[in-house]
Length: 364
Image (tube, rainbow, N blue to C red; front, side, top):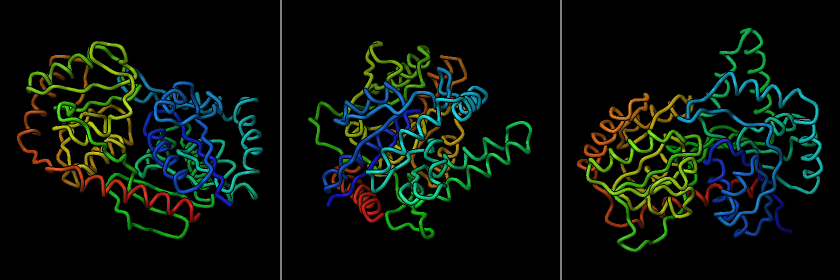
């Protein structure tokens, strides 16, 4: 009898959804029955581009950002409080998920959806729930509670959430720099962030720079300055970002973006786990567009520690300054880069990552 898996991928950004579509396809190929839930209509449409039909759980829980991908902490805390304590929100989702858990062998919570955090500490339900999260995201989540007022309440709430995470059947902590054979403790697994296998593209399809900005980026002058900076460096660009879909040369979604990034001279993205993983696996230099998002700041610092070939640029509202930052970073990275002559080693590394995830989840 095949394994029955329920996969809940939050749609706050697209890293959770990209990871979900990679693993869902791989798990189905391995014989598992996998159903997918997500938390926004935009997330549903994104997954459809990758051949995944997802059911909408609810749209009440979401981290809040501005148009430059800066996290809005007060708005996020307010949204989470409304989700937790208003009747008909989290309680309704718990009742709905409870029905679905009856027929599931395993439930994947990617990442930190409050309903499954709560359910993951209760008898009966906890034995089926696995929390999947980036190493830097967990630190950012718990640190966020430290800044709440009154301080004792923030610390108490952080302690409760930490206990909820640890109480579930298992936890899978991923990071762009982990290796396949990393391990930590029973029921806490360390795995490298999964990466798409790069498809072969026609020679003319390879871009000088493969750019991806997640949907929280929608400030027009930022996009224009970024494109202009790459042009100043003599690079053509393949531009992808839902926040800019339909603007100039930007595409909203490109299912082949990972393949284009694997074969580009240069990657440009915010320092999320997915983009950094592609850069590491396919050994491509990357420009990191840094904003006020705690876990991504941690990721950028990690990239520096690991000596990943990268440069950091920061948008401060000055288009001319940002254009110069991007151009300078692009010139430096393309001069220093020595890309692999073939993508075969990268595809082997990507396949090993996916295989490790499938093995771990099916064993659970």
